[in-house]
Image (cartoon, rainbow, N blue to C red; front, top):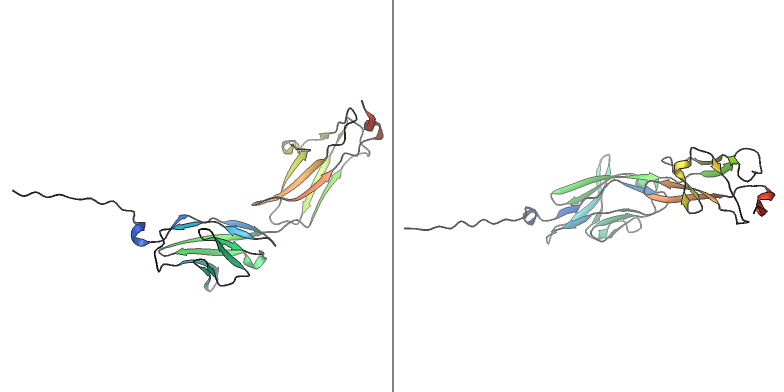
Length: 209
């Protein structure tokens, strides 16, 4: 009589192949003139395996980093688990980038956001505004890339949902003016620009009780 035993061994396939991108990079926005960070994480890297970041061109790709080394220190930097920092983002940095970790390659795109050339807040109607009356307050942002998302605040209170309606100005008990703020956001970057406006109310309301 003979006996046999079968041993079943469970193992992660990545233990065989080596480097594995467990946190994959995603499409990212970079603000013109600022640093952009493309986050990721690579594990199970074996000795002799390299992790590359490459910039994709029409004719192929260019190695810009390998492991924690960079080919252009004034432009690229690696931090943490292969996060790629692109310094002083310019329009020519826009495009595709590959994270190459052995058998696995992830391609992402970097888009460049451009701050608005001008941003204004203007009051409509007859000036000055009488206390308790209504007036239109308009925020205008021009020539940003992409179009900015505008948020309204009255002091610390978010009143963005009221942006399609008139704003009623009140001032009582001799309290100081509470400013209106228009805040412009671009993808990945909040409060790129802020404009502040005080209600141009009549002298009477300065002493309203």
